[in-house]
Length: 404
Ligand SMILES: Cc1cc2nc3c(=O)[nH]c(=O)nc-3n(C[C@H](O)[C@H](O)[C@H](O)COP(=O)(O)OP(=O)(O)OC[C@H]3O[C@@H](n4cnc5c(N)ncnc54)[C@H](O)[C@@H]3O)c2cc1C
Image (cartoon, rainbow, N blue to C red):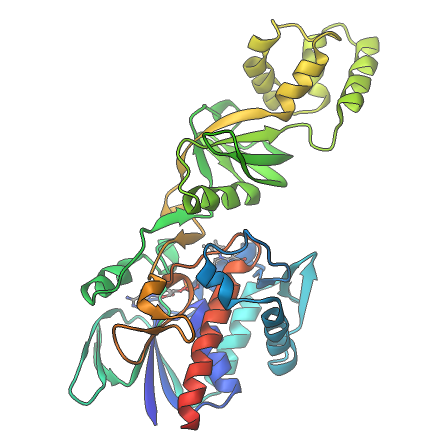
């Protein structure tokens, strides 16, 4: 029986070995994982709820044409069918976002671990660090680890990217692969909070539901999304912000900025009406922003926009104030670093690979799946989809070898 070594006890390797187990492929599989347990990142997904996939794919869902070509609308039905009807894991969804019915990443991960543990041909080598590989004369690979050397016919790299190193994937794998002549596109921390040029210290921890728009330095709108944002002392976070952080990198934007609509779903007429009611009951017009915001946020916004209306909110400038609050500008400084980014932008270049099965063009019988690739998605389940569908590609290739 041919041997496969999977590097990384990752989300992808759990999907991959579940597929191998379900389709009864005839391989002896070893998973090498540096942590004590497998699937640490999967456990952390979706705030512990595991946002497994997204039923809606749009132009922003994935970062490049190669990744887009791996996942189509029909594939989504395949994935749903695999988990629900093949493995018996019930799923549920909030709008387009699909989760395990348990809303528990822990029970989902344990389900997969139990399932693959039932396959006698799969073994786990935990607390073992993969260090390198070399070809030997029998068309096999020698796998060099911190706990000794092994031999294998196939190697599948499922070792993740560089984000959230506390969960295991610290990017050291890229240095190993560079030595073997793999081209690695520059790696940046995606899906992260962003730092702003303006100080936000006074509104640290303030949360608000709003619309955020991203612009390039030619004032062209790149993207907009509604959602809750949370201010940090030097920037801002939230799902829509994390998506924007990846788009800035993908589009290589120089000096981009964001505009926040602090009056989401409130029209100018409604705003004026509320002001008129406020005037009847209050003497100090300049406290008007307390009608909408927490005290800290109202003071912050008032302080920063009042240069434009001479410290006096009145019926003559109320439309101008509306305009300032619906187009409030912050200048982008940088993304937060890998410690707080959910996904790496960049990775193994598709130029090294055959897109049909994600096999290496450099070394025979080597494959890549998941975040190690130059593939990333927006928040909302797209990154676990990349793990699942890249794994599926490789399993299909392995299944063809099995038939030969
Ligand atoms: C906090 C957080 C929440 C997230 N939530 C979601 C979500 O809800 N939905 C979604 O779609 N995506 C989410 N993501 C992104 C998603 O989790 C990742 O994209 C996905 O898990 C990547 O899977 P992977 O298989 O590529 O690698 P990973 O799951 O990152 O696993 C890589 C594994 O390889 C091991 N490894 C690396 N190098 C070596 C080595 N040299 N030797 C041995 N072992 C090694 C690591 O220890 C690690 O266990 C989230 C990410 C984070 C950080």
